[in-house]
Image 1 (cartoon, helix red, strand yellow):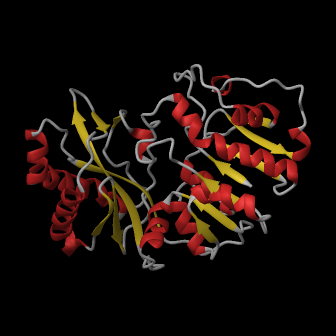
Image 2 (cartoon, rainbow, N blue to C red):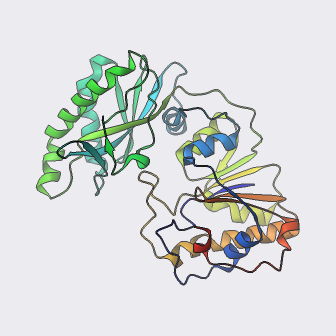
Image 3 (cartoon, rainbow, N blue to C red):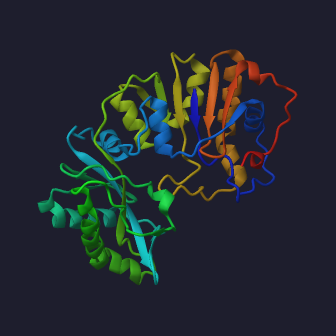
Length: 334
């Protein structure tokens, strides 16, 4: 079983405080740990399914497949995350707009973009008020880091230049997008309300829908559209992450499982959700207790936990009995 729970372990600047979570601490202290490579949630998910990870993972096309199932093989889909670009004396800086758009506001902006860019073969779709997609038949994948990785940083261009001639149209298109968004009544009202306008988008995760792969995963429990789309693409049964504990209590898994729970982070910005440390621990403590019991009873052979932090952890039944290893607080692993 592969377990992905970003946000559980505090970052270097996030002390865990006086939080007690016996099952989680027991799992971590008895598991084998290894230094984790730097990787995004999307890259890790793609690799765990069995796909080779290249520079550009087609996140947008897979998400479209999850929500609509109409991502044709020849179409490029690109994530266009609504953003705010602020200029200082020498550079541009990408910022999160803060208060999200309402569903109605998001739809108004997307409709304005579609009206403007229809003749250029672009179609914008709002997956949610905080995540849009763009479909194009001629544009190659744009290789850019995820939105959450560039937030707050200076950018030489709002959209990194891609490699071929056709892709270099995107900076000019982005200028048009920014001008349209800046002048839209939705953003004028946001400014009047003291909010940052959504005056740009960050384009990333582009590509065509991949074919299925020879995945070993037999069931997925996930709350991300990307993981759900990969499950659908590979004809793998998929359920919500909250259903795992009950499933392990009722039957022995028929094969490898993948569990992805992003409830502890904001998947758009990557920031830890605004909850107390104890609330975060309480959210996953019951699951880890079930996993320890499942390992003890032989229902699960091995659990690999990917924190998207400093370490990865692996616990099997034999390692479970390392009783001499004392529990340590969560911030010991940050």
